[in-house]
Length: 264
View 1 (tube, rainbow, N blue to C red):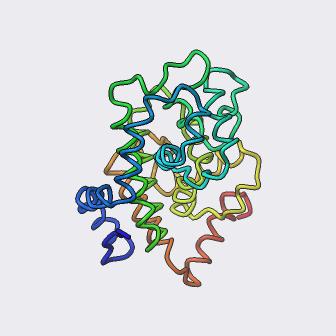
View 2 (cartoon, rainbow, N blue to C red):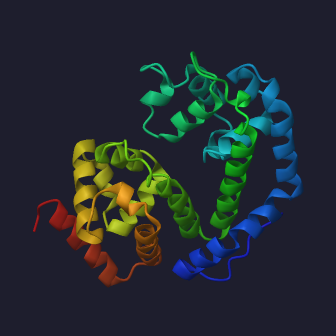
């Protein structure tokens, strides 16, 4: 099995992985299992006329799901087929009704739904999916050693895409963060919010995240926080908090939650 080299932990480990990522991803992509799956995807995806064809091919399905961070759904083929077949155009499409926005991204990319252009017809489609697959596989291997570093790498990639989302409202972007579990976990931890916030009404959750962001980072605009110079401090803060908590850290988190919830 081809693993990854992680000689450091915390923020230093994240910086090391960022600096060596290109070389480590290339090594991973050349491993026998990954190389076989990627070649199968490249050879067969253009021949698939429907979502049914895709979910029945285990190798192609593995690449497709992994590219969107949904590899745990390999056994949920009925769900994946429905997400892909429904597409994203209709309001009642399953991907539009699921909280996790990764399903919509998957369906939109492949374009098997009604009135959608099939993804396989786009000239850069195969290369984009293969690149996303390798990136996710790299993060998964990192997670086998250090889950907090995996989440930090994932959040960096996902949030950096918000920098150019000038046409999306602040509420829409915060909704996407809260609806994407791996990214939510990083932001929640960086802001010192307790996981119990998830039990509140969604509008109240967004309000708490935005207030905490203004308090911690001086802004609640995700387009601003996604800029490289603003994103790095968020990841540093997350990685500092993601380790074993001291009594002081636990006390600080409780105080932040109490203040934001109006208790003091």
